[in-house]
Length: 281
Ligand code: AMP
Ligand code: ZN
Ligand code: FE
Ligand code: FE
Image (cartoon, rainbow, N blue to C red; front, side, top):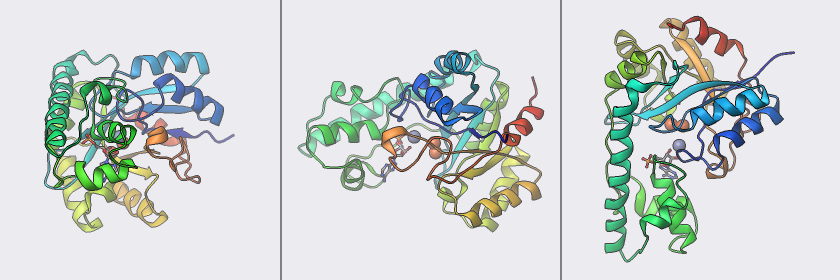
């Protein structure tokens, strides 16, 4: 029987709504063979997921997702680390400490706009250290200042809106090196979100490959069939490997299911086998 996997998921350790253990239990119920937990800027959910993986018979891959310091949106996934990754701790602590500082600055801006949200209101939704705008948005909905998370972003929290504050990010080269130093492999996530054409992506990704990039996300919930084919061809042409995942966020992205995305995505286990062949440790 063909086995399927999901290598892009967010837990309560960043902006998902299910705990790492709940994600693994769900994976078991769905019959998935392997799952990577890829929270933003933190590995804090990985240990719990590995334990749950032993209980439910799911292969758990240690992962993380970083945002790149760029003039256009780019995210890079780190997958298949040799876990635990102690040499990454200082960098991750700096990123998550900055997220907490930034949250406080955003709350001050909201206060000036007549919106009174406390840190404790936000932390009710943030399970861990990796606090993000979705948690502030959830607190704004709960306190009745907006009716949806989307409205919170569109009026206040999105880039260019009055409560937006920039956060600390690493460059793509720094992220690729950091991942490699810890035995992981780096993949540019959801390529379409860069807003670049496929031709532009060939140039951008070639340059990153020359700096050690291992691959790109070849399957993602938001890809059309055509995008998926184009990006998998790009990977082939540039001799890169692929990863793939739903970008599951639980109830924070209601139409995105673990494993299958919008319902019809299927990522074969061979994708993970190939990543493991490429492992350096
Ligand atoms: P942060 O990590 O604080 O920069 O927040 C980034 C997260 O906010 C992303 O992972 C998205 O899930 C979410 N997000 C960003 N922009 C929007 C938007 N316009 N509407 C809803 N969610 C958004
Ligand atoms: Zn997220
Ligand atoms: Fe992302
Ligand atoms: Fe993600």
